[in-house]
Length: 55
Image (cartoon, rainbow, N blue to C red; front, side):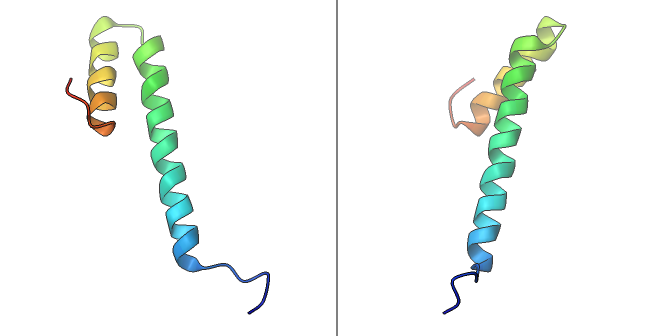
């Protein structure tokens, strides 16, 4: 096997994990820095759902 060969499944997993982490990061920043309390609350709720916690 060639040392430079990359498994397509590994690439798909890494891409999915990166996308999930970027989504969590964006929601966490929104939950802290949103201008309105309602938007902060909504971001915290979605973040809790993604982390499988009760809102």
